[in-house]
Image (tube, rainbow, N blue to C red):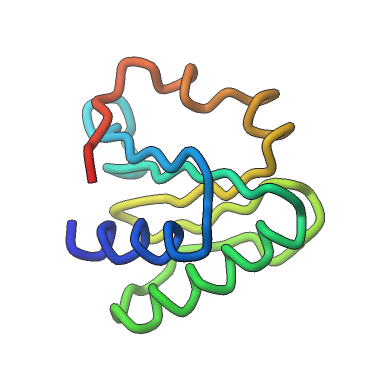
Length: 109
């Protein structure tokens, strides 16, 4: 959880919007937590990715995988125990991951 707190704090510092942490451990076989955050624009999502990378590196978190292609409006970082989804507002509204995982418990940070 310490790593998740660090990630959320870093995203808050970069002004990510609508940050939600979902406990999906009961519903998912691939991860325990999802961190969802919205960027106001594609450059903002890129900036969020930069601060996320720095936070994970500082914490010594080993990544399983990550998107390397910018410009899609949606970036995913897989840190095994948790996954981070950075999306622009239109992508977040279109894919509605919050609704997809509506049975997950929201973790208050």
